Amino acid sequence: MNNTLRAAAFLDKGGTGKTTTVAHLGVALEELGYRVLLVDLAGKQGDLAKHFGVWRDYQQQINADEAWPNISTVFDDAWGTIADKLGTTAVEDLVIPTAEGPDLIPAHPGLDTLDAELGNIDDARERYSRFEQFLDEYVDPLEYEVVLVDLPGMTNNVSYNGLWATRHVITPVEMGPFEAEQADALRRDLAKIAENFAVGIDLALVLPNKVDTRTTLAEEYLEAFRTEYPEGIAPNYIPYSQDIRNAAQNGMTAFALEEPSTTAKRAREGYLDAAETLITRLGGDNHV
Ligand SMILES: Nc1ncnc2c1ncn2[C@@H]1O[C@H](COP(=O)(O)OP(=O)(O)OP(=O)(O)O)[C@@H](O)[C@H]1O
Ligand SMILES: [Mg+2]
Image (cartoon, rainbow, N blue to C red; front, side, top):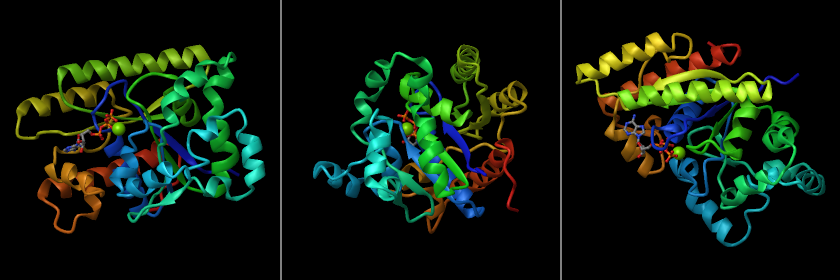
C-alpha cells in the first residue's frame, strides 16, 4: 500500500517564499520523524539545492555532463525505457541527501524547455500526468512518507504537472491587499483546473509569511486570511526574519542556525506547527 503524502508549493507569483517554505517544512517534517523527499521543478536556477548548500556540487556535475538522468529526463517519452535500462539505480541517481535531513531531487537546466516540450503532447491527460506517473511508479517504491514539490511561480505545463501529481497545494502568502487578491486568484485557478480535468486540488496550507508583527495592519490582514481560509490557514504565521534570508545565502535553513534570533526561533516553531497541520490535512497519521 502506498502511504506517501504529497503536496506542492504554488502561487502564480514570484518571491512570496515558496522555496523557503518547501525547505523549512521539509526539515520540520524530518524533525517530527518523517522521511521526506523534496523535488525542485521551479526552474534551472536550483534554488532549493542552494537552500541546502548542495547546488555547487550538482552544478559541477551538470557542467561535466554527468547530471543524467535528471529531473527533466523523467518527463521524457522515453523515461520508462531509460529507467528499465538503468535498473534500480535510475531513481536513486536522481536523489541527493542533504545535511539537514530531507533528500532532494534538484532542478536542472532541462526544466527550461520542458514547458514547451510538454505543450507538444496533444492529449491533455498525458501532458499533465507525466510527473504523477513518475512519482507513482518510481518514487513511491522508495517509501518516503512525504514528498514536497517546489513549483514555478507561474501557471504552465510544469506547474500543472506538479498540481496534478500532488492534488494538494501549499501557498505562502504575504500580508497585504494585493496578496489577498493573489490568494483569491489562486483559489479560482484551482477551481478552474478541477473543473477542466475533473480532479480535485485543494488548498492544504495557506501560510502567512514575512509577517511584520510590529504593524497593526499585519494583524488585520492575518485576521482577514483566517476568516477567508478557515480550513487552509496555518495555525501560526512565519515572521519576517533576516536570519532566514542570511541562512539561505549560507546554504541552510533557520533550523541549522546555532544562535538563532528571536524571529528565527519563532519561524522554526511556526514551521513545526505548520508541518503537523499539513500532515493532518494530507490525511496522514501524526507520529506524535
Ligand atoms: N520569513 C521570511 N523572512 C525573511 N525573508 C524571507 C522569508 N521567507 C522568504 N524570505 C526571503 O524572500 C526571498 C524570496 O523567497 P523564496 O525564494 O522562497 O520565494 P519564491 O516564492 O520561491 O520565489 P520564486 O518565485 O522566485 O521562486 C528570499 O530571499 C528569501 O530568503
Ligand atoms: Mg522559488
